[in-house]
Every structure is written in structure tokens, then in C-alpha cells.
Length: 178
Image 1 (cartoon, helix red, strand yellow):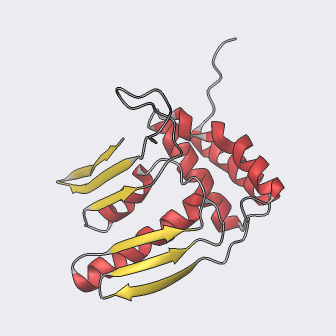
Image 2 (cartoon, rainbow, N blue to C red):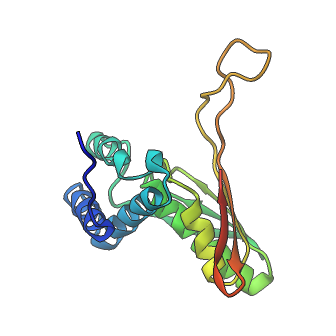
Image 3 (tube, helix red, strand yellow):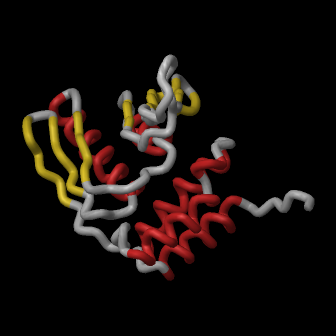
């Protein structure tokens, strides 16, 4: 079967419409759709629109809440914790990065944790947010065990993604997402 190419704007609009039908608020649906399509555009299809059916299943079965009550509690001059309300990981991670940016602008550094969330997709999106604000950004998360460490016989470690972003000099940001 030959490849079919769809303009990324149309793909994002389609994904956003799907998320709205699944109960997400329009702005939230747009954010999640944009992060998925951005992953496809970066060539990380495993975190792109292919995840839509998985997210749809979780939204339908209630393990992800479409309209979570996401709250932030500042825990120190440069720290905070985001309570995700069992929401889409992209919404929780973006809220955490917005808070980290605000803290960094106030205190020089910002460290924010998040809990009660779900799969946040590729972390590149969040460090790009920091870079766009003129800041260095780090984003990382846990992952379910999927790897067998050297010398062991059982699955024990997750891939535990980490991303780094920095403003580019006279150009796009530097982003490493692994």
C-alpha cells in the first residue's frame, strides 16, 4: 500500500476533533493534537497520531479524565508540584512546564514535579516551551519496566525518557529528546 501524505495542519485538526468528541475542552484537544503531530513531524512516529486509539480507549474507559482538575501547589521559592487529576499527560506536563518557566523567571530556576497523570508523549514539546521563553529546559518522566538490564533475566528498567532544550543563537532551539 503506498504512503498517503496528509498536511500536518489537517492531521492536527482531525486529531483535535477526535479529542473533542472524547470530551476534552477545545483548547486541551488542540494542545494534545499538536504534540502528537509535532512528534510525527520530528520523525518520532511512536509518539505521534498513532497513539490516538490508545488514548481514546483510556478516555472511554475512564482511566484518563477528559476534563481534569489540574492544580499547582508552590512548595518553595523555586519549586512546585502539579496534581494532574488523572488527566492527559500532555496537559499536565505543559502545565508543569509553564509553572517551571514562571518560577525560573521569578527565582532564577524552577523545578516542578507532577503526579496523577498519564503518558505525556514526547518530552521535546515541553523543553521547547522553556527555550521559547529564553530558558534552558529539562523534562523527564518515569516509564513502565520494558528492558532487561545486562546480566539479568527479567524485565526491570523503563526507558525513562529525558529531554533538554535551549534557545538557539539566531535560529531554532537546540532540542535533545531521548
